[in-house]
Amino acid sequence: MKTKKSSKTGTPDVVLIGAGIMSATLGVLLKKLNPSMSISIFERLDRVTAESSDPWNNAGTGHSAFCELNYTPQLPDGSVEIKKAIQIAESFEVSKEFWAYLVENEIIDSPDTFIHNIPHMSFVWGNENVEYLHKRFEALSSHHLFRGMEYTEDKEVINNWVPLVMTGRDPEEKVAATRMQLGTDVNFGMLTKYMFDYLEKQNGVNLCLNHEVSDLSRNSDSSWTIEVKNRETNRSRDVKTKFVFIGAGGGSLLLLEKSNIPEGKGFGGFPVSGQWLVCNKPEIIEQHQAKVYGKASVGSPPMSVPHLDTRVIDGKKALLFGPYAGFSTKFLKNGSYLDLPSSIKLNNIKPMLAAGIHNIPLTKYLIDQVRQSPEDRLEALKEYLPEARLEDWELEKAGQRVQVIKKDKKEGGVLEFGTEMVTAADGSLAALLGASPGASTSVSIMIDLIHRCFKEAKTDEWQDGFRKIIPSFGSPLSANEDLAAKTRAWTTDVLQLNASHLEEGITA
Image (spheres, rainbow, N blue to C red):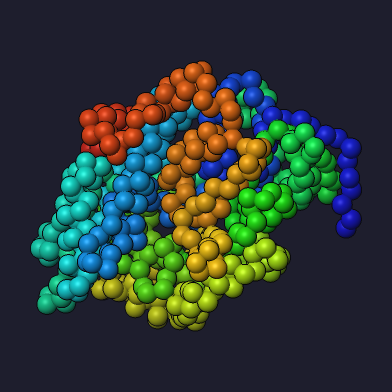
């Protein structure tokens, strides 16, 4: 059916593309900093958080680098690099400050609807891995953001922490684990819904579901014209705006390419799909209370780091294992198989080919993952739960992620794991590419975006506004031990992240 064109136009100050955690965070920040700002949000699906922010599509780990071993690589000299881990831990503390602000200002009714205290653990086996984990513990525990981390090679202690992991394990096998009691599980879908509920009540905010941005072009005055199609009526209209944020998850790359900004040239995307094993036995679920992360297989992407994961989704306790990686040419779970081929342009084909050549182990890993049988997946699970039975677990689809490929002078092109913010030189457009740990660090990412794209960000009024929302604003928590302790105590209290609250409101 041919798309009908409507002459109706709008002129919001800001257009947000995609109704996920990033757009919600940016929208709330901007309305708090400037209540008179008008914002239009366009989401191609019929509900908010339907893609990457949905709890079944998102790992739910409050990524604070407490347990994720891929954030602390071992260097050639044997030492462990913790710079990225500190950066992520600091960003998550900033996110918690923002969420505590939302609770105190009654934008969120109750913190236990979206965040729970779940210990974060790293678990390894074998002499080499045990040696690495001990070095990692020594490096991290020396920094105040990781104060309270515990390390043990004692099997009885680990059995006390996570009995399912130790039951049936070879008594001669050397094992080690770390634990941070302060770890969290976050339902980013529920958190995002709260923020959109707030935004919809504000003057000048318009949330349009079932609306797909099909094109965008820059005007001579540096504003943008966005072509938006209503997927229900098949009518399309133009919307003119001063600023565009492309926060469409895996769909961001295709829209960035349509913008034709020079800063977006050369970027490509490599899609990785995922699946979970979900436990269907309440008596098993009740025996585990932790997020247990292990070491990734050689060549595997960070989103595929195996973990045995206690989750709280819609007030119900769940136990997941995975994710098992796969490959699809879709950039979104609800996307098109033409996404990958249509993203290949003259300006990015060289970086994409170079990245492919340099990541042969990743390609082999994904092929092996796609070919896995149920018995193969069970064997992977048994590395964490030695007595696991196939009939106690069901296979469910996880989210779709698009890893960033970018130009590199030395390699030609490199595959990046993480998030990448691309902004136009004049600050009129920004696009967020990549995946983990995006949701957990969304607040820091959006504060950085505002400073890049809004000249008002440096005014006294907006700086004061930031400090009201983020008490530590302007003072890096990684370098200020006293402030970090003070803000962590405050967020722990407001978000009710204490041991006595652990089991309240959670049912298996």
